[in-house]
Image 1 (cartoon, helix red, strand yellow):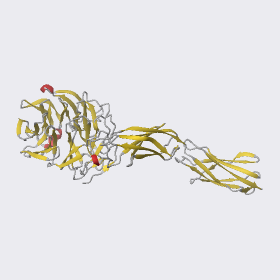
Image 2 (cartoon, rainbow, N blue to C red):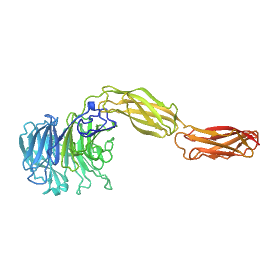
Image 3 (cartoon, helix red, strand yellow):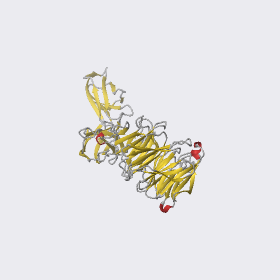
Image 4 (cartoon, rainbow, N blue to C red):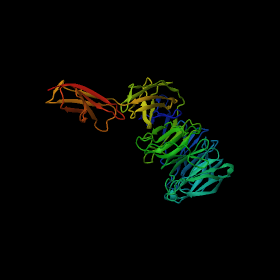
Length: 576
């Protein structure tokens, strides 16, 4: 398979790497400690749900197969290594939503006309309750010991997008209406004990969809925070694709196809003080999932070409470490992450992601297992720079050394550099660390004065961040020079012609230089007509001397904000 790498800064705590033999592009992944990625081609043609049993290490993927009332559904069952254990066929009843009980003993599945439970070890089937006929696909969630599911009120698939949908529950084995309902394929997500989210997709009957948090404790269903996102002009409405609760239940992450990843406070669904950086240009949010250990968040997307389809990064948005990026492209791993297509193992040891091709007709399951080893890094010896005297507009190299413990990475490490001067802080980009640990930050400072360079290494999959290192460089004006070519002798009758060249280093002058010319003879000093330098830097001075003897000609330029002054002189003996 074709595995490529694209250089990026990676988190010190980031959990995944180049997926060995997976046929996908991953940013800057040291192959020696890369995450393993088992890629499974799924035996389904339409995806509907993904669920994980952490007790028995099982992964369940459902094929809804809606469209005809006699269609049978499929639940493919895998272990955490990607081995298919069995395939459950739901005879003449399409299957959609899946949920695993808290103790891992039961898999609950939403079928066309009922809710079934499967023993997660024997796969024995039990009908939990019959339900209203579903033509669209159900959501199923386990929260507070209860089973909740949605029931769209549609008589054909064509009505599903705008169908009125009820939120139902199984109470004492019986199908019970909770009384909550709205239009569209309502999404459910349970987590953090007795918290459950319900979100509404954008549709023609819901121009300003909602997001709500429910408390499911004591067998009740109490709505707490709720929010709609459009402003007074109707802009900013939620385009919901997925939703997730953080491990501690304090935050809600939403995959919004129009706004990217929204991070909200669970208490009131207000925007969190710190949010995640935007998805790469051209990527549309499709899925989101927090790891069970609270350390990471995975953000799935739909993108084309080399634009990342999956970002994995620290869950804390205040950690500005760049995410690890995965690009899925081709027949070996799919093209994009499907909506609602990601789940984590409870301990954060694996991420399960479902991808599909551009046509949405084939599906893959990626089982991503992160590396466990990280080594320390440090800058040593301080920073040096050359040339010794930096000049505005001229190339400057700031050099240093990054030491790292552990084996050498398969891909070169990268450092990031910034320059801070009187005009603020400027991002200089990333620079490759050589095999011996040395690196060079290349810059052209454009302002005279002190410039402080900061070099950072934010870590990668197997290396912890290094403490930043800085140096302050005094940036002077760029030098200029004047060279004159003058005759040894001239005459009062034929005059004197002097040619010269003006050279300015650093940033190009905004206009051609105008040079001052003076002549000193036995009668005194006088200023001659100034001369403008040509486009090629040359100039010519023609003068009719006023007296015999030595005439000293001085040509000078006063300098500007970025260039130093310069001058040159020549002596000509004047005859009659």
